[in-house]
Image (cartoon, rainbow, N blue to C red):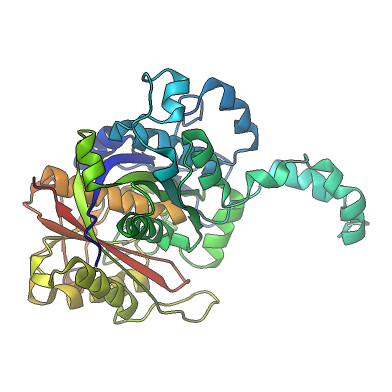
Amino acid sequence: MSDRRVVITGLGPVTPIGTGAADFWNALLEGRSGVRRLQAFDPSGFDSQVGAEIDGCTINDAVPKAYRKAGKIMARDIVLAVVAAHKAVSDAGLVTKCLIERGDCPGPTNVDSTRLGANIGAGLICADLSELSEALSSAGVDGVFSFAKWGTEGMNNLTPLWLLKFLPNMLACHVTIVHDCQGPSNTITCGEASSHLAIGEGFRTIQRGTADVMICGGAESKNNPMALIRQSLAHRLSRRNDTPAAACRPFGKDRDGTTVSEGGGLVILEELAHARKRGARIYAELVGFGASNNAGPPLPPAKPPADGRGALLAANKAMRDARIDAGQIDLVSAFAAGLPDHDASEAAAIRSVLGAKAGQTPVLAVKGGLGNNGAGSGAIDFIATVLAVHNGTVPPAVNGEHADPTLGIRLNIGKPVDANAGCALSLGYALGGGQNAALVVKRWRE
């Protein structure tokens, strides 16, 4: 077991209810919802027409002026990650190449670039339909797609750098270039479990001594026609189009699905001695990580194990890694997207983890006001967990008043409550993919 301790010194949430740690936290405390009828495109032909969107999120305030032209080859997911990285780095008080070139702070840097890395979760980035459809239309013969014509004519209607907008590793590529991260870097593509796995891998990287600081988390946008139809065909979406803000009901007795969303977040993980040396503010300590897999049938509607054994296994591994038992868990952060079978499975796992404490231990569930954005959703959950532990407060669950009492867990309903949470467990899993991950966070004490 490594004696290198890992702390959280920066938070960079980018969400439909708030960007940056302070705005996001205040929105959680207010029980704000970001779900509305989709405005990015006309959703009237879809069964589910609501989602959570971010207004006014661009790279202009997150990169040096000379780098803005790179925005032309950034899909929405990449933009979200770049903005999240800037928020996290700034929040941590790190001085990187980006902040110096932007004039945000004077040099020199206060982190060794060769010891600064990044692990970022990414999803299936959807192509821009306006670009793709023009190319496809030129590859048809009598209304039928022709691979031969696609190779000779269709591809010529795409810009030479078109593919660089849609490769999942481009999130980490741009973040590492902008902030001069020369340490270990990786991309995790495991659906909704991506952020937890990316943070867990960053945790291990610092423990092993191969980096001092890691930028970790994930981002994704599902607010486009291709992602919306995929989620619809997988039977994951609520059809409460007349009441968008009430559509997603985590652990609700009448839950009928989630909503699409966009966003994510990146966090700064830092080796304790490194953080202390530069006088960093510490939010909390990351003390445990566990992962598991319970792959099931690949075709929708994929159902998780009713007993939640995959999530339970990951949680038990994380607690064992943290050297704690269930009696020390004061708060559980749930994935809780409002899907009937998945919420029931996760609730079963939480009951198994907590035992007799299940009805008394508060469960944090934030997707009622945010929906599910895939690879970035776990980072948002994790950031909410860290803030809850740091501030000693559990925000209310949006739409928590619909909670199903038969699930045997305790959602906070109505208003924030004081909670002296010394130790929190954050759960994440991939819908249909079978990947599960868990992280354990402790309140920071000198």
